[in-house]
Amino acid sequence: MIEIPSLRPESRYGMPTADLMLFNRQYIVGYSYLFRQPRWAMQIIDENTKQMKDDFDRLDNFREDMRIPEKFRATLDDYKNSRFDRGHLINSADRKGSKIINSETFLLSNMSPQKPDFNRDIWLELEKALRILADKDEYAEVYTICGPLFAIGDPIEVIGDNGVVVPDAYFKSILAERTKAKSTNQLAMWSFVIPNSKANKPLQEFLVPTDEVERWAGLQVWDRLRGEKSDKLKTKKGRMWSLG
Image (cartoon, rainbow, N blue to C red; front, side, top):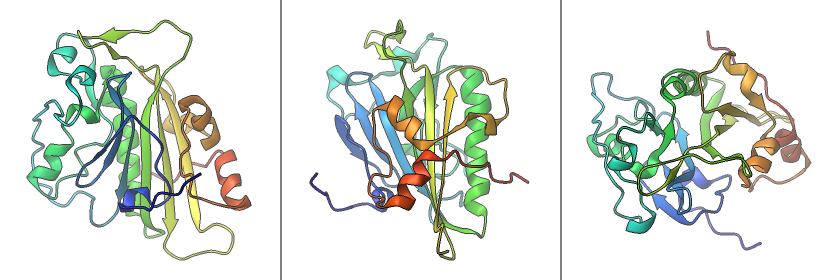
């Protein structure tokens, strides 16, 4: 395997493959031509990227991403009257440092068809939980990667003339660096798989081992981690952090 140097801090611990890499000011998208949406999106949540202006209103300027070839691009018309939300993978609430930073989260290259009772409930709850995690003094930086999951072999649903594929579920994997290095566990890892539907269980019930995410998504996440300790991190189901 050829190692590609990390040109962005988000990719410090690895960056999966994709048809097209889209580099934004505070997040990276790996775009899927086939599914007409991100295959994954990654970010860092730290003191430089967390919510900085409480009075900053989100821009809501949803628009096409002109960096994507037109024949592989999702459009606003694809989502219109589809009964699905334009669901953010990288949310806008943590990107309020400037108008352009917030605006970039509304590119359709950052959107995926999410059922409203998923997007506005459990997915939002997970985003809020990550802000709580990132605010803990125990952690210096929190890295996240998330994306859609598709049940290969099952009937598919698409929306719009461009055939944007509706995911069956979503994953989010979190890697956190502890502020003070410990001999056995300098890093912490959690991964979630949540169906694209209304959740009837608490957030912690959707925790899974990270290698389960990799098998379903067909992606390697945090692939620059090396050694036995790192391998064990991926096979353990993390314990939910305190939300209090």
